[in-house]
Amino acid sequence: MLSPVHRQAWIAFFTAQLELTRAMNRAMQSETGIGMEEYGVLLGLEISENGMMRMGEISDRVSLTPSGVTRLVDRLEKDGLVCRKSCPNDRRALHCVITEAGLAKREEAWAVYSREIESRFASQLSEGEAETVTEVFRRMSDYWQPFA
Image 1 (tube, rainbow, N blue to C red):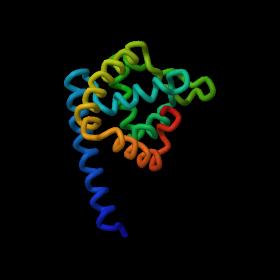
Image 2: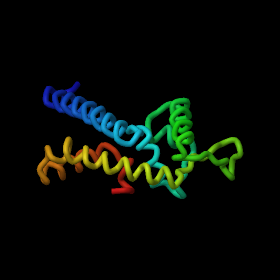
Image 3: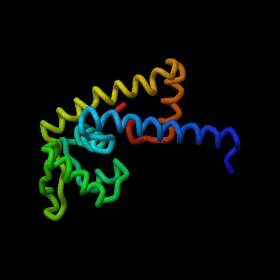
Image 4: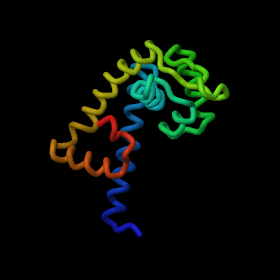
């Protein structure tokens, strides 16, 4: 059972994360035409080997259902930000590949995203607090460890 202190910590984290995500998503959507989910896919593709991932890998990385990923990739493909290619080892599977336009859009979105991170998150933490937050969150998730 959660202690009162841990419960309050969770509520504070959950509420802050939700509010930050909503605000950042609104800013990115209004200024770049893509939201956090699209940004997550483009970033995942950019940092993946050869700029491509299988659709199932994307689903795992951005926590969307396979049909949700398909709809998201459909929109990105329609906008020329990604393309689909057959997997050389499995002709039934598809890779999603980031395009040059996708790389440019991810960079454009990063300008908005980083500004929002600075104003809504980083400005609220001292350097020491930022180090503590980093340490705690890294213990909870190893997803971004290779990219840190």
